[in-house]
Amino acid sequence: MLYIIALGAIIGILFLWVISMQRTFVTFDENINNAMSQIGVQLSSRWDALTSLLDLTKGYAAHEYQTMTDTINLRRSITRDSSPADVQKQENIIVEALGKIMAVAESYPDLKADQTYIKTMDSVNQYENMVRTSRQIYNDSVTKLNRAIRMFPASIIAGMLGFSQRTYLEAVAEKASKPSMN
Image (cartoon, rainbow, N blue to C red):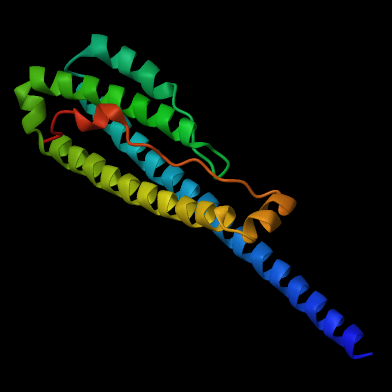
C-alpha cells in the first residue's frame, strides 16, 4: 500500500512539473510574440514618419517622389506571427527609402534646414531607437525560450508539447554604414 501511495505521489509531482514547464514555455512564447508585435508598431510609426518626410521632399524633387512613394508602398506590416526575415526585409526597405530621402535633402540645403524636416527627422531617429529597444527585448525573449528548450529534461517536454527554438533578429548590415540622419 505504501508503494502505491509513493508511486502516486511521484506521478503527481511529475504531472505538476510537466504543467509548470508547459506554462513556462507558453509564457516565453507569448513574450516573443508580444515583442514582435511591438517591433511592428515601432516600424509602422517609422513608416509614418518616413511618409511625412517624403511629403516634405515632394516639392523639391518630384522625379524622386514617385520612386520613393513606390518603395514606401511596398511596405508590409509586421504582426506577432512575423518572422525575423520579415522584419529584416522591411527594415531593408526603410533603410533604402531613408537613403533616398536623405540624398534629396543633401541636394536641397533649404529643405535640410526646414524646421518641419528637422522635427520629422528627429521623429525617425526616435522611432529607430524604439525599434532597436524592441529588437533587444525580442532577442532576450528568444534567448530565454531557447535556453529553456535546450535544457534536459525540459527539452523532452518541449518536444512533446511542440515548442521549438526561435530565430534571433540579426542586425541590418546597411544600418552600420548608413549616414547620419541629422
